[in-house]
Image (cartoon, rainbow, N blue to C red; front, side):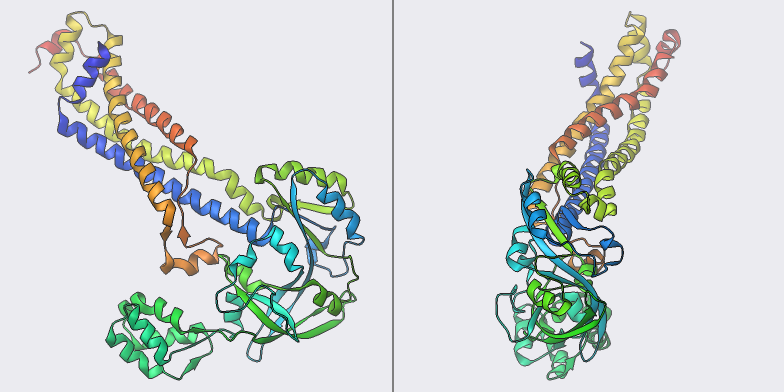
Length: 475
């Protein structure tokens, strides 16, 4: 009876109840969808870091990661590799030589980490081979007279290997892509000119167009003006295992493009055999062994087992290699809970205000119910149920809308390309695919019910303090 009465009371003032339910719906939707966006960003960052940069577990000589001393190598790697491969859960293994050095062109020089790899092994552990930019080359698939190097797009920009130019063909493509004629006409004055860096080209565009035009069309113009000559040359210099400086001319086999600008600027890849000849590192000796496993959930168990098997080597899991990423992963659930609690707390104040108005408007009615024998427990339950009903209705609608929007946006993602430089500077993709664990929806429902109960306590206590005799005389 109390439940039925409480339900009818919710709709005695449909406008007010609808406003409260709508505010809860919007609040829950905003909270859940924001969490899904954050979850998508964090998961994408973790996946890209593990699949493209560090993998799950790394094995190296003790002290190697401190200063990358080229003399700290793993000898007799065959036995060690066999022990790793026979560990349950290990699905891939690759060998690396890692040296610190410089990448040099005629115009620029910059410090880099030179990584010697076996391309076939790398494909079993990393997905970087899928990130080669179209039109820039291959993943060590062509033979050349010079040694080959794979570099990141951002490093190519820093070394002025990537340049920018406009010609008649690119102007036609821009028109096809919707750039107005007055914009392409002004761009035509740049035909035949070549800009050695992105910075110079962007500066020129800003001088030619208004701020709104540059913001609207600048990115597309920049993308079309982007030019790269396949097989460009640069020089790598580094110290060999005996600390003698070595230099070699190399040809760029391709450019890789990932969501981490820092990694792109600092890590270049060459073939193990080529780097071994130059550095003097013996056969079957490496600086690092990179281990891929079957599940991220098994990282701690497998890394602990390898530490026991390989006591003379340093075995590090991805959590130890990038502790900031591990901390972010572990803290996300706490962040999400706090975020939702803040939103629901704000909504609770609106529910309290509404229920107080309900109690004050129905003072005479509540007094009569008490006078005819309804005890305080039933009055309290009725007020509480009214609050819970509105909270649950708004919450469920908000969750359903969230599920629908998340499922729709998860297919194609949400593109924040105008902020891509900022995102990628932090290692995140500017194209976000919202995702969320189903368990989170159940947790939100519990929080909503809890919020409804808490929000009803003060108004219900207010109703219990009413004196039946005085309440009946209230007009």
